[in-house]
Amino acid sequence: MNPHRSHPADRRVLVLGERDAHQPGTAAAGCYLHEVTRRWAADGTQVTWAARRLPGRPEQETIAGVRVLRAARPLSAVARAVREGDRFDVVLAAGGSIGALPLVVGPSVPVVEVVHRTDRHTGTRPGQLLAGAVGRWSRTDRVTVALSPSARHDLRRRLGLQGPIFVVPPGATTPAPDGVTRRATVPTVVVEADLVPQEGLDVLLDALPAVVAALPDLRVEILGDGPDLARLRRQVETLRLASSVTLHGPLAPELRDRWWRRAWLTACTGTREGRGSRLLDAAAYGVPGVALAAAGARDFVRQGRTGEIVSSPDRLSDALVGRLVALADDEVARGFAEACRAWAARFTWDRTATLLAGVVEHQVRTARSGPTRRRSARPDIATLVRFPGRGPVPVGALRSTDEVDVADEQVNLLLNGCDELDALGVLDRLGATGAELRLAGHDELLIGPRPLPPILAGRAPHLPLVTDRS
Image (tube, rainbow, N blue to C red):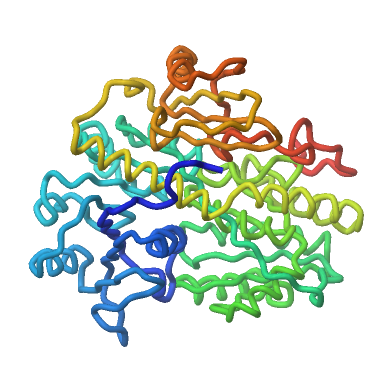
């Protein structure tokens, strides 16, 4: 539970993205923002989404309470709205050109940039230098949102971003109850992806001949659409995998649901793509994952409990074979399914919406009152505080970016940008006594202050097979 508002109250939010959530081929960024903004709109926030024009759809429509504006360029849609009298309190940017935003919406409007791909500016050496320069000299009223701690670290290390970066993970979409579809009788890998180079599906296909040699009845079902569909089908033919691999293209929701209920395993082979929500959606079905150790993806597999992190592509075949052989045991499969569902349950879209609302509200207040020095020198650390009791927490003494959870007769706080000394000052203002505090670790930065259930905590159970051979 978080006592902060789940939406930016009384704010006019502009979302800037290349595609709105209902365009074909909408990537993870569009789905993420759709889940968040439709919740904000339902709670009364005025949300306007500017996107590229979509053939066959109007230039303006309302989707799930969100006003969608379309034009040849998203910024052109914003300019049209401003000419017609619209004003905005904050911009939520997820793609497209944001450098010219101050000229359109005004220099005082703060910007929150949600980054799903940490490689977005690094295709060439000049691009890397430019990205680093932008990061070091970006406007003080712009902050960045990363989806995981490793993605934030990557933004710091590779792009040199020095401003505040908040971690706001995606949620998992809970499947509807189903009492009919059962797990497939043969080893089945299901992958849902946008068919673009960044997803690394060619890496997965290259690993499959060795997997098929070990498991001849293997089935790999790839769900999704995109510009790489034809190329990937040619690769399947070249590798002589047509009897094992099917690229389905876009599927109706009920067919997608059916494949996930039949799956034994999923795979994530993108090297720098924010695939967390796809791994979490699979986990919500009880499906473990094998993922390359890439920033923005490795955080969402709990090693040995909800799947396996593979250090390099040349180990991928062994990892897939090992996991699938282990999952042939019904008891092992049930154990992984239980852990996966418990893991996915820690990631909800309601929490995502609340955390992102806290970042937005913090930025609006900072832009209007001037930057605060408190905690500002330590943007990437947080302090975990636990103390007994279920009494009310005075929200006014906390930042909107802090997180509060009350469970099992215990109050859990995650104080962002705060070390232990700062935390003592916060607890003094709260009048709290008997608290335990320490710097937050990776788990708390990702899933919040509530302790993990036993099925996810501690050392992973021993598998009947070692899968990642050195």
